[in-house]
Image (cartoon, rainbow, N blue to C red; front, side, top):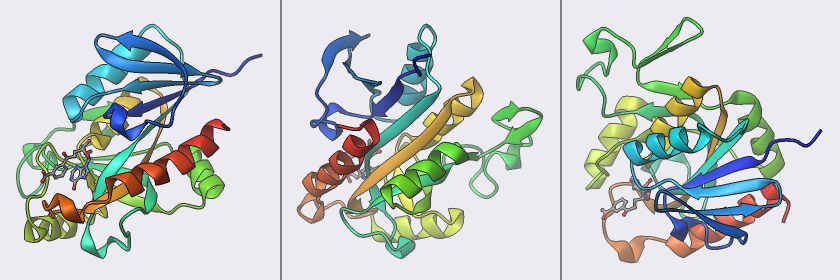
Length: 222
Ligand SMILES: O=C(O)c1cccc(C(=O)CC[C@H]2O[C@@H](n3cnc4c(=O)[nH]cnc43)[C@H](O)[C@@H]2O)c1
């Protein structure tokens, strides 16, 4: 029996220039079909990501979904520019009250199999562990916000408050949507910048995308 294709998502097509496949369009989002995989651009930010994923899987069958892209590393994460990591957990850092997140409002954002989730969403453990050992990458705590850290002090405070290693703008929405829909989700990020550093001369986007290329091509077996 044929297995279902792997669904790959990235916020922009700039993070996936190395994928070659049959082009398609999904409500203005770029897509590609390859042997055993489908790639879809999900857009920047949480709303774009959750909406695109939920709409796309409504009429198509997938078991496994991998979100990949660039990200900012927090200074104490042990991650350097160009390094990659897989998410053990995603933190939705925008929701609820400043001290206490959504628990402070007294209700969860999601309940699955009687388990409440507030601001922290695990990625699928089996899929993530498989990728960690196949690719030799560490598992880290990822944090998602609509607003990026705009200076090192803000980045440091966020990292300390949430015990996070890496900052991005989509992952928590992806992890929450996967949990809700019963999809096995994993997330791979390459460090393009240190979080809070806005000087693009200090960013290494090309190096990060090359690191993504290395790992994604291994995953899809190209
Ligand atoms: O101009 C800035 O200060 C700035 C800071 C962070 C990111 C950007 C972007 O335009 C990229 C957003 C895009 O890439 C991911 N990303 C990459 N680095 C970070 C980060 O340090 N904090 C949050 N997100 C980051 C993000 O997931 C988006 O898809 C501009």
